[in-house]
Image (cartoon, rainbow, N blue to C red):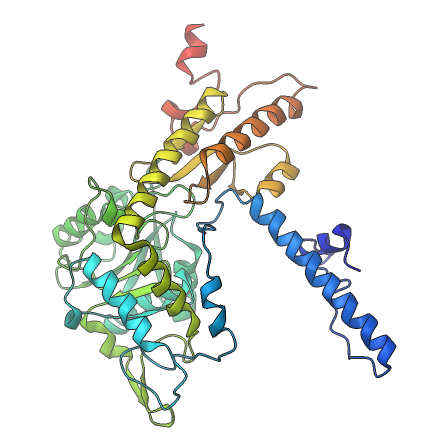
Length: 432
């Protein structure tokens, strides 16, 4: 039977860093009827224990990764018995009839309307996630400019640098401001060092750690001033904040009216005419191959289509407003407790000093980098849950430092002096 201790192995690793699978090993079904019944009971108990484990982990997920855990797809259970596969691209049917292309194209059209793109002016598909979207967008840039250089800020998602390695393209990292936004002065300097080669630029619409939004308009101006007109390709990585931006009135617009080549948003991939450089007709599936993955999950479009129909533009706008409001609430509550915290404009990612206790980090599944951690405030994070997290952090913080005396750690280099509450930078403590 699966016990809680047994299920802890789900997240434990051995000496070599390999995930421990004690009790989860695949076994042959016993021949003896009694032994087979015992084995079935043990499997049922293990699965029940695993379900309990997932419930507990979900309850303590503090938006470390931008997953919205507020969903109910039980109405779609009827489709789980079908092997739905959207082979090839979304706009041309293959000879495999169990697909969901109509739902996929309907989802893509919804996003096209969101960005004011005509249906016959774009190409796109639903990917496996943000990494695939970045791999595809940067691959198109590489195919258009074979001698191009990828430029990406240091705070870009790791998949951007993975793409550079996979495609064997030189990659130049650009410094960032304290906010995490691309430093366009450094961008200009490095462009001019490579003036003879085209630029393939990754623009972040919400960086991984700080939720920073690169200044697209300034990046375009910098490219043109440096003599790169018609010699650049821009891919926008909007996996984090791309869906939020159109619903924030004061947010700058990311639109194909500007000279960008592609955008990826939470698993959706859009681009303009450039897709033809990757298109290949595949006879045995009677379709056209222009996606990174040949076989594509046909269930995902159903889930997305159902969600968009259920919530609509107004429903998503309310969720975005809630996320922004709760992110400001969390930032204020942390600072009230003396915890240094920072929130970028147009972002729901709250950055704060890294908790000293690793068991606390593990419990709340916090993503940490150096001396900071963050919470990406998603719709499922209520004010009550955020307040509970802050209270537990405040109590734990006093306990972690009780033997040595407590002083607020300095995180000015990570979030700016104006946001750091250490003795050196906190105005209130200096005035006292």
